[in-house]
Image 1 (spheres, chains in turn cyan, purple):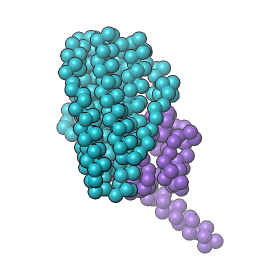
Image 2 (cartoon, chains in turn blue, purple):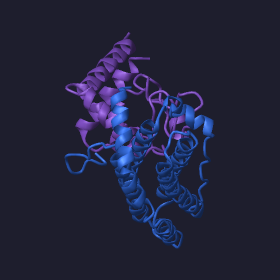
Image 3 (cartoon, rainbow over the protein chains, first blue to last red):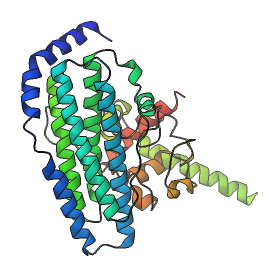
Image 4 (spheres, chains in turn orange, green):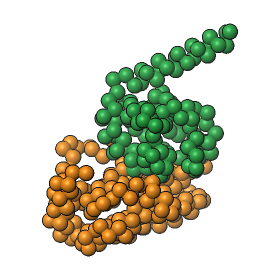
Amino acid sequence: MNTSLIKISNSAIATSRRALFSGAGQATLSASAVALLVGCESMAQGQRTTAQAGASDVNILNVALALEHEAITAYQLGAESGLLQPAVLKVAVGFQSHHKEHRDALIATIRKMGGTPVGEKSKADVARDLNAATLKNQADVLRLAARLERGAANAYLGVIPSFGDRALAQVAGRLAADETMHWTALAGALAEALPQKALSFGA
Amino acid sequence: MKSLIAAACACTAAFFAATAVALGADADRGQQLWESRCFGCHGLDGDRVGPRHRGVVGRKAGSVPGYAYSAALKGATVVWDAKSLDAWLTNPQAFLPGQKMNVRVNAAEDRADIIAYLAKESAKR
């Protein structure tokens, strides 16, 4: 990797830590989880969806849950890497807590819909599959986190048309918004340019 | 003999159908789209939320060892090529009911470019 790029990125991270940190503490996290469960309750109480559509929705939610499991473990790997500065670590742990809330809400929803939540992979398996051994500095960790967050945001946007229950489609939009917020903060920390054009997500 | 000719015609038709999808596709743009749209769940060489993508073109559906496929994909007979991947990415559930991906790529140009990238990476096996 280009060492000057790493220096620039690390410098950018250092100078943007304050903004990154101050933003993280202001997030209200429980609202999305509560709303998700409320949406689920409405379905459990008799929204008109076919059994097949319900099963398909559970499949989609389980893929979302697998994404959240992976994100939680990825942030854990970053936190334990020893590569993150304390302030950045604090933000990473904050983002991880968002993913834990997503996970818990998804598990509750899947169970309420009669499904079986998928389990998480081992930390070693996630590290292998994400090639975590190649992460050598803070910028590497944040770049991987940014890639995962953008990918997750796009995955949530990409499944919206597939939901049978429109309330769940809205939930996917809200989850995508959280992931986009994470990506934006990470891109800022890495001093990466924001997209020049509108509608850059989900396309 | 007739069946051989019919099979040859079918193969030729499949080839041209696959080629038609890929004509003019931009693998470099496809790489950017893959990074944005696919990397959330897939790696090239590791099985994550979804199975690995390197080698997907030409691979029988549901055949990566050790990956926990849906019953629908396990039982599928399709071999991934440009045509089948285009249909899959257009609407996975319509293509193979009971699958679990469900992410759709709406623009035909985007699908073609992603498939071109997957074909390029699949050739690097």
